[in-house]
Structures are given as C-alpha cells and as structure tokens.
Length: 85
Image (cartoon, rainbow, N blue to C red; front, side, top):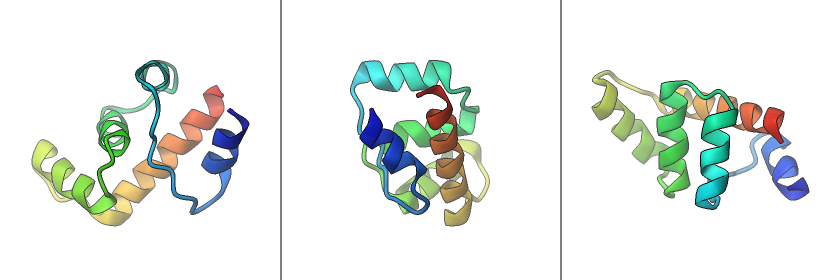
C-alpha cells in the first residue's frame, strides 16, 4: 500500500488504477466518488486512455467533456483514494 500512496500523491504521476476486484469495490464504496468519478475510475481501471474516457463520458452524459475535465476528475479520484488508505 505504501507504493500506492506514493504513486497517488506524486503530482502528474501516471496511475491507471489497476486493482483487484476487491480493491476496486473498496474504493468505490469508501472513497465517496461522484457518479462521474465512478465512471472514470472504472474506465481507467480497464485501461482506457484519457482521450478514450473523454469520448465515452461525452457519449454517456450527452455533453462534451474535455481532456482537462477528465484529468481533473482523475486528480479528484486520487485524492479521495488517498484519504481512505
């Protein structure tokens, strides 16, 4: 877990959220993600690129998502994950 804390806390560090099913369920339950963050977390866990997530989120929610918006959601997700570790 210590290396995960380090990866999550380093600004700009890449973290594609590759976790076991139990770990993913734990973070989704305990971190307090918004609905959008849950979608981004799940896509990132499946290895989607930020650009792919941008396109998918636009399709799901019916409005444009920018790369910077998705990157912001990922930062928020990382901060929430850090709080529960």
